Length: 220
Image (cartoon, rainbow, N blue to C red; front, side, top):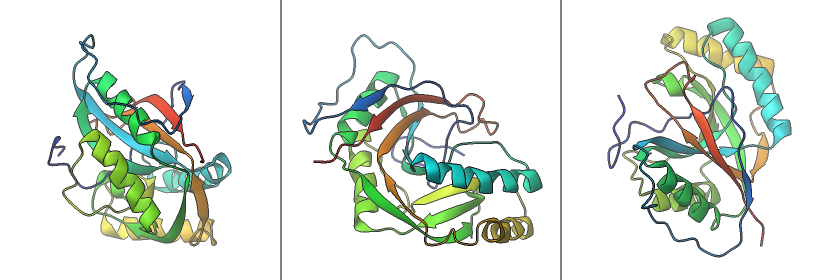
């Protein structure tokens, strides 16, 4: 069940299986003001923010994910870490929030510390990331711009498989990850892109999900 506003279901990981073209922004250190576009008459929809690993890492993770889907099914999606969970906004406000948030975040490092299984469709099998201060602070900073309040502590992770599997099936899938990529634990990579996605979390096929915008994080 999805709740928006101050009550959000446990942190999900969402990404479109077929991303649309996105505008890459090069942001300055100037803090953008978040405001609602008075001319925006679009309905409020559910949006989330994800952090992208660099392409070589994403390619490596796609291979693992393809192996899991071949054995257990589930929709295809791009590897990512959720930074801001599902929240309902108008599109213009969501885009402004992403730009303002990204202007205050520098590229940061994430490291895989384990392979785990969860209790929800969107947390079926995933890579657990080390909750370092920079990883947690990046999420906290972005959540502040979106007005997102967590109902549970932040658990940074990269989902590898979405599905409603039994505990036994999840454990088989978890072990398969370590068989496919024996050195995945300890994998370290830089996050330098944040993306805004429109995500209807009731759509488990992911067919309606849409990439709205990507912001490139700048070094100073």
